[in-house]
Image (cartoon, rainbow, N blue to C red; front, top):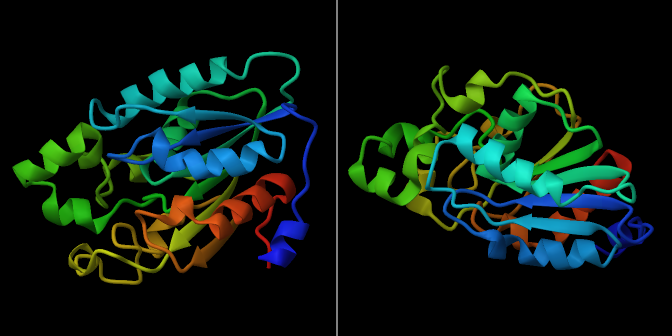
Length: 227
């Protein structure tokens, strides 16, 4: 951790922005630790708090990413980066599949279901699943026509951090390979990504681990994860 910290450099205050997008059923509070750490390096932080269960992925992406970008208006911001957790990464992929972001810098996704999740395949027909996860949750399966699998390769600078530890053994049993309790290591990946690492954390808490946040910042600053 000390070696990684030494590689991270402060920037001119508010010369670059990082937009944080939390995952399904979470709130912006889940990204507070990342916001605090990244602000200390000089970045302007926009911690988006969106109602993830209220609408489908397309509606959520268009409304809340557009709002976040408006908060980054101004000549002082030279680049706009993103750090996302879980479904937040799918929102960003959906947004960028339909429009561009002029000052887009680098993107780091934590535990994204980039090829969907078997958990949705197995439990999506349960009424309780819909009650807990809403319409967007049902769009995250592994079928060819699921939203993640319809978005295609990425064309922006993307680094992905997947987890391979779980605190939910029941859900992990629904996934036939190494996973974080909700998303498999293999299904977190997407064609076109620039770098990929696996870290020993669970889906629910990966975005709050300091080592993960600092790896994300290393990618934002240098375009690769630290070895």
